[in-house]
Amino acid sequence: MLEEPLTGGNANAGVVRVGDTVRRPAGPWTPAVHALLAHLDAVGYRAAPRPLGIDEQGREVLTFAPGATVWPERFPLLDPADRLARVARLIRAFHDAVAGFTPPEDARWNAMIPADGAEIIAHHDLAPWNLVVEEAADTWTFIDWDLAAPGTRLWDLAWAALGFVPLSGNPAFRRADRDAAARLRLFADAYGLDDEEERRALVPLLPQRALAMYDFLKSSHAAGSQPWARLWEEGHGDAWLGHADYAAERAELWTQALLD
Image 1 (cartoon, one colour):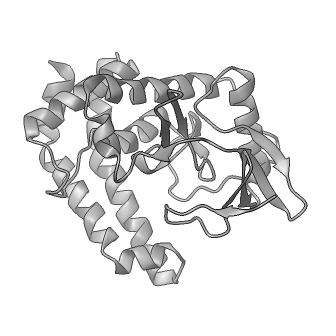
Image 2 (image 1 turned 135 degrees about the vertical axis):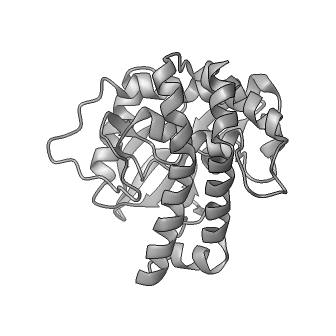
């Protein structure tokens, strides 16, 4: 069958569509990721692709998610409150589904930015650039599970809030402070983050998670690791540092919004 290269994203070299499947270069982490995706499918979580094994070229095979990623052109799709809440509920459903997952004994993970904790196997990149929406069929799918690794619910949720609310230091995407705070509250409510201690704990993780991305890009540039070194040269490091500063400067506002 014909292979159609899939564009978009930062690490998509060699990713193609073949019929209703996606073929991607496999890595040492692929068996563990496929075990995770098989578990999610078995327990009825439908916002993730299904694993279909390895093809004759040694590539992983996944079901193709119809639609297009939200970021960047379709990001206004998430402006309505009910759409933002739906994202949060999908994340909560994933976290609940993965809680019952037992990784293979020989599992290897591609932990790009390790979390401080191993409560669950987290996605680590739940973001608008990894959410595919097909409006006609009303399907929403999180893709790019290669970075799945041990982590925590709050670590995953902090990253998702930065991207989906969004909590952005970029004036082109920045919302008025009160609007951003209200959307953060909505996001946490829809996720079901009901414990006051967890709500307080989420706030410092917002700048910490953005700063972790800055540190990762900086070290990748020093090591010459692509495509991350290129992103550093394009200014993405400075952008994440700006997001971290923005989130840290408004910590009191975020806390008030989450607790009032």
